[in-house]
Image 1: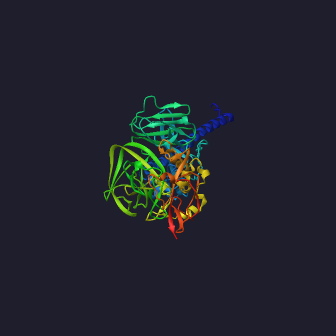
Image 2: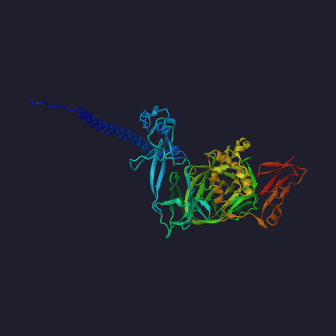
Image 3: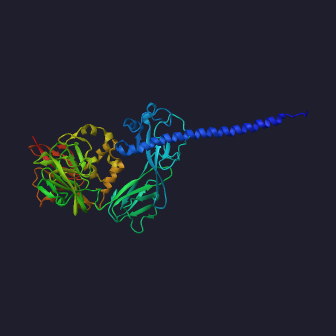
Length: 550
């Protein structure tokens, strides 16, 4: 027999090494496959949640917060998400997750610039993971929207910024959200104006040569009506898109059509004839009755191709352009006439009849296509005027609804709010606003709205910039030698068209209230204060004093 040689030790070791390498490679592949499977399962589970969230955001818009997020708990409570759904971040039943109350799904966008036509990808974020609806990729573009109790292999982008950047559009330096056909306007974002792009709806056709870039801004111009969505792109920042309107009717205006009858101390006067020396009948939110105020701001004449005609149960008709505020008894606050949810047939509004409040009901609302002139007037302190006997106010009703109202349209609880200095702006806080507007419009009290997230300070300034600080739209107060003059009158004065001039007082001057043996106090409705005869009062705006007898 022949001897058979066995494997040498070296050969055995070599085989073992080869087998070890093979096993290592195979093991790594298996582990990678398992991890990939887990990741895919996690992705699919989370993608199911965000797809449900997409539908939830459409159906339950009131549940979407200012950051575009909805709470997972709300989705469970409202029946959109099964309580036994697996939480992809923890593997637990989602209803038993300890952090359910803080988990959110957030919607944002990424923008890929392509000349002037950006490609917008909808992104839904769930606890720091990003899921594209139009693909299976996952990117770490989102800041975690809630507490994550498990470790994640996803690295958060260190360039993602917490603050969203808004896009704003301007005409002649004034910020606007609505433009007329053929208006040339430009848009900016906080980081580099040239980063702004646009996306037009299918009904829009831009004018020849537009859009165009001019140094640090993009200039747009449209010939047809419709909506234009403005987008921005900046690495690491979330850009809030802005939708603007191109319309024949200036929807950002709050106005009354010509020949609307405005109640004054001398009877009724067409709105187009109101001037700064006219004493307007206004409803006092302090006293709950008619008082008389001079205008603090008058808008110049403008035109519209259509208007809204509202008919009330007593036959009264009110014609408005854009948005304008009326008092709703149903909601106990002012609402805009273009608010289809809160102003409609059946809405009960406040009218003044022989000095008393009267409830009338909306019976018909029509949009009339007819070219009309329109105007707007603001009274000092209360903002309201009585138009065709309806109590109306500025369309920015959030300013008029600064405080809650009692049933007789008087302020409820504003004294306590005013006692807290943290609810008040100093003039230095709003020093871009002329002092007469700061005083006459009670601008210092607007901080209460800002503190309660009703409006931002920037939005407040933008409203002023587009209206009362816009020289193109404002009828200037009475001016002599470069100084403003205001009417200062007493209830006992015999005022006529011919002698109004003698009651004009220079802004900043001192007015001394006359002494009268029968007068205990002079009441100034423009600041709701009582002054003793002989008191000195600084003239900041128009004032009318009524007597309180001894």
